[in-house]
Image (cartoon, rainbow, N blue to C red; front, side):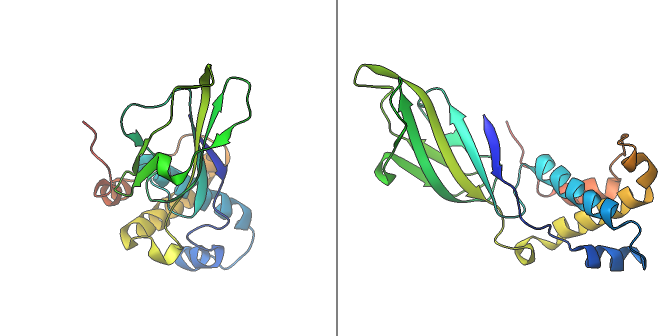
Length: 185
């Protein structure tokens, strides 16, 4: 199971940049615009299975995988740790020689750990990793444009957004994201 441990500390588009793009000269809607850009970033990240900004994730497994482990979201930059817990013993950190990261998109890794140790079966295997572009300036222009468009659309439909009702995604946003979608077979 994938779990977000540390979310991004900033958003890829600042409030002042959005207000300038939306031609908003007042501060009445600052809170909702900030929520909208967070929602837009989260939507794009989930739609593409791609981390846009630095964030830390955890993958927990109840077995040692026999093949490749796919790490999601994409743009994995580093493996922070790989730990294994056998029986009631405390979790032990696997050495870098026990796993190998392949930084393709999506990132994949292999893990060489025993399924039991000292007569105790593996309870949990945990991979903690960092993912995301180093900064907002590294995010492709098309993805930033999709964030601007989606946030502007949310602002246009702010009554539905504020009421937490469904706000459809504009076709232009989907068209921009299409080039980044991973086709799975």
